[in-house]
Length: 260
Image 1 (spheres, rainbow, N blue to C red):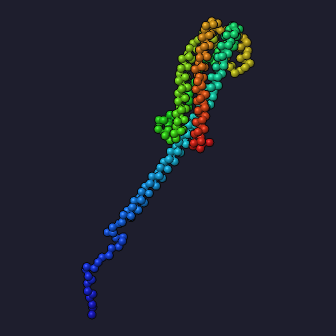
Image 2: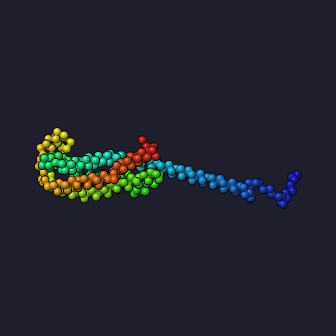
Image 3: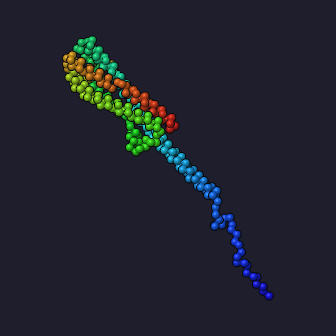
């Protein structure tokens, strides 16, 4: 005969499992979860920061390599510029000595030779392509403060030399005007074309070709203007300082960004 079990007590107590959804967490568990979340966010932030710094450093390295190339061009051009200025200043002093101690009619060949360089246009133009690109795009921030300061100083000396060259243009125009009153253009062309051919220049100097004028006041005015040009461009040795800063900046960029 089938026996039916009596129903269980409906009031039987329900036991709660520790992981049951209705389980109330202790404050220590909340603190642990918070710390784990905080640690994950912080590590993510640091990882992202490191990644961005690495990317910025690599971009700075690319710009540094480009700027080094520009600065190498500048150093070559500055060396030629300074050498030409020094040679011109020496010839200007010789020109003054000739007019002081000699009869212009007897040394006219030397006057053509030493007077030619005074009418030359002296001009240094920096290769600032990378710098202009970085300034316009705001990427100078990729360089550290020391490098950025050195770049700014270099640019400042470039502007100083540019100002001196702008002032020299006025003297250059006056020199060319007076030179046209003294020297025959055909003889000037000959000296200019054979300037570095010693035998031909020596022969030319000995022939003493005539000047257009032997007026002492005009000759003296020409010499003073020529010498003023070299004083303006060589004092206070802005080009020399610019060359040293270019060399130092190349060295610092290579060292900072490990460029060979």
